[in-house]
Every structure is written in structure tokens, then in C-alpha cells.
Length: 206
Image (cartoon, rainbow, N blue to C red):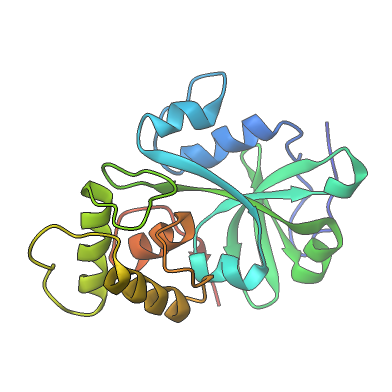
């Protein structure tokens, strides 16, 4: 079923009505096979995790990764497309294998900030780590923060202590993220990005 969107320079494609289908289309960029059913569960088995949040366009630019935008959410009949590229004036959306480019003003008329994307989790990733927690994911975080600073990985077992939280806050501030000093999904995404972990990126255009 078609859901037309005002186009800057492209024919009108069909937008997706099924959110699960949008996840499957996004997963194609990650080259991870996703069977029919619940995509996020299948992706998690490959350490690729789903993330959904209401965000700003500047934060999406900062993250620099493709994701699902939900259009017309306020109508109760939303449609979905994959954001693949951003310029200073336009956004490129993909749905059902076709792309269209729209002005940011046209996008703003139908998008209220709902954004979903994928990210690659390190070994041993756990949510809601307590103060003093250790393990593989904390070792990974400490090593990546050291790489960002141009330093060798710290010797010994890393812990989510006051020093590491301060390093995380400094990194989060530098990346324009909420600075809570804890390694959440947005922080992992940016650590992946700045240290060269291979993940799909938004196409860069003038």
C-alpha cells in the first residue's frame, strides 16, 4: 500500500507499513540473515542489537548510521522508511528497495523524532551495569577510551569505577551524548564509530 511523501527529486516509492519489515530491510545493510518472525531476536544472536528512541536530527548526524524513521506516528497509521543519507537540506529514504530524496522541511512535517537503528555489541555486553562492575564489555570500553585518547589499553582488570565513569563522561560530552558516565547503547555506538568498528554508515553527500 502506498503512502506518498513529498519528494524533492525522485519518484514516489512505497513506504513500509510493517515495522518488522523495516527492521528486516535495515538488517540487509548489516549482511546478517534475518528469518521471518521477530528480527531483533534473530539479530541479537549475532551480537547486533536493536535500538529505538526519540532523537533529534543533529544526534542522528552525530551517530552517522542508517536507521528507521517512523512517519505519521500521530495518525495511528504509521509508515516506515530507512534513512540512508543526510545533507544540509535533504534526507534520502529507502523503502521496499527504492529510494527518494526529500527536503528536511518535508521530513519534519511527518516525522516526530522516532528513530530506530542497529549496533554491534562487544563480547559480554550487559545492560544496567552496577558501579564496580567488570567483565569483557568493561575491558572493551576501557581499551576503546584509551584508543580515543591515543594511549595504550590500561593494564589490569578494568572496573566501572569513578575514574572510568569520568572518562566516559568526557567522551560523551565530546560526542554530544547525554553525559551520565555509564556505557549505554549510544556510547557504544560512538565508541564503535570513532575507533573504526565496521558498521554501516549514513552516506555522506555535499
